[in-house]
Length: 218
Image 1 (cartoon, rainbow, N blue to C red):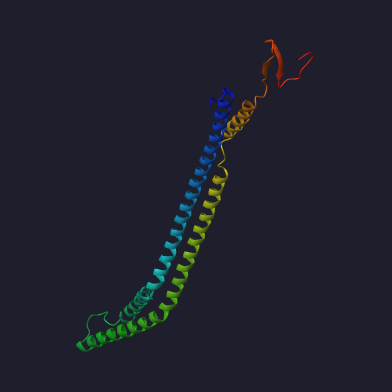
Image 2: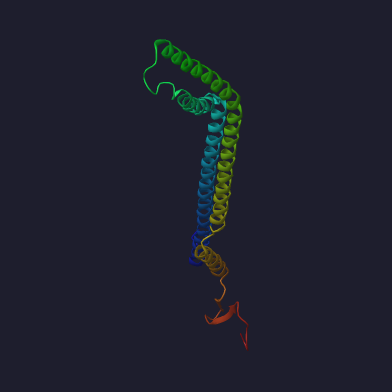
């Protein structure tokens, strides 16, 4: 059965309106999905950054033995010992006319002062190193906390901007307007609004007009 022209136009307009609405919905959803995925990737990167900072702190804690602190403190003590030894023995050989016994005594004294100073320096370094080690470990933890706090603030900023971009993604208003127009137009064409249909009488003259108010003899 043939389809009337008005019916075909109505169907075409309805299909066009429905297609525009569907495309608008799908396009908007895809844009939102892409923006949400970008936000997730950004948050994942921030999380990896935070994990790296924590791992670095854990490794530093595990490797902390106090050896570096002890070596540093011992070096400082030995500098003081050497300076004191040079000052205490500096006046023994001013003239250079010492006997062999005096020279031997000088060497023994120098050796004794050096050994004693080295022993004391080692003991002092061993006592000071643990405290310095704990101080350095606390400093490392504080630095890690500062880094994590900064990463957290950056993550919050990223999430805020991502939400703003998501909220800014809107349906295309022109496509929605076209869809509404096409739907309304298809309904008008399909119902025959604004037109009429004449029927002929037995004498071949117009008898009635449907869809219009009759006046007089009509």
